[in-house]
Structures are given as structure tokens and as C-alpha cells.
Amino acid sequence: MENKKKKKSVAKNYIYNLMFQVLKVILPIITTPYVSRVLGAENIGIYGYTLSISAYFILFGSLGVAMYGQREIAYNQENKKEYSKIFGEIVIFRIITMSISMIIFGIIFVSHGQYDIYYRILLFVLDFSYYSFLFNILQISLLIS
Image 1 (cartoon, rainbow, N blue to C red):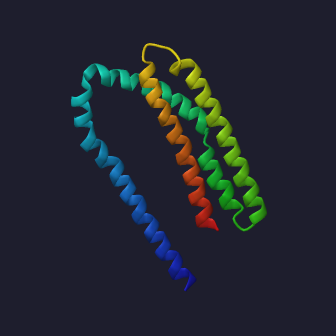
Image 2 (cartoon, rainbow, N blue to C red):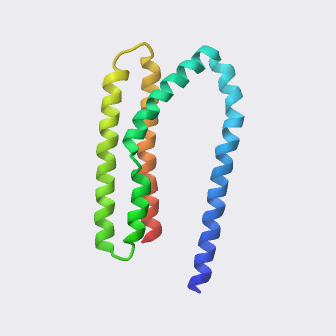
Image 3 (spheres, rainbow, N blue to C red):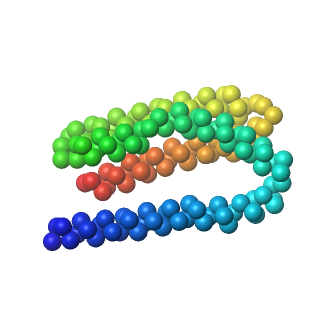
């Protein structure tokens, strides 16, 4: 019975992952022509420039924490005390790195500059990156428990 339940869970996860991957391909195909027409060539260039700079801050804020967290939690899923300790450490580390990243980004780019409105908008991208991490860790913890 346990094996059958596990196979059903794997199939369900596969379907969800497949749907997510298909949406990642289809949505840009649908939205890119509309956004290109509305923004125009110059604003798309500005957006691309500001997004590339924001990507560096997201990279610093992430530091591979999600993959490390998944691995460590998977190794210690039987030991609930160690699991909880690792989970807490990972969340605290991610909060610290993302906070530092957002503060530096805000000081350098949002407060002044030629494209400050674009950087303000992309500060939300940093926020979403942070919240998506918390969602992934919460999802992992619910699946393991």
C-alpha cells in the first residue's frame, strides 16, 4: 500500500512539474509580443539593462541556498531535531543575504540614478525571489513531514 501511494505521489509531482515547465515556455511566447508593442524598443532596452543589474543582486541573495537546503533536509529527514535546526539555519541565512542584497540595491540604484523608476520596479523582483524561496522551503518541509 505504501509503495502504491509513493508511486501516485511521484506521478502527481511529475504532472505538476510538467505543467510548470510548459507554462514557463508558453507564457513568454504569449506576452513578449504584447510587451514589445506597448513598451517600444527604447524602454525594452532600459528594462533589459536594469534587469541584468538586478539579476546580480538576486544571485548574491540566493547563493545556492535552495539546493543546499533541499540536500541537507533530505539527508536529515529521519532526524526531526537536526532537520528543524538545519531548516531554521537556512531560512535565517537566506533572510540575511536577501536583506543585505535588497539594502545595497536600494542604496545604490533606487534612491538615485537615471533609471530609478525601473530599479524601484525591479526591487519587487528581489522581493519575489525572496518569497519564492520561503515558499519552496515550506513546500519541502510539508512534503517531508
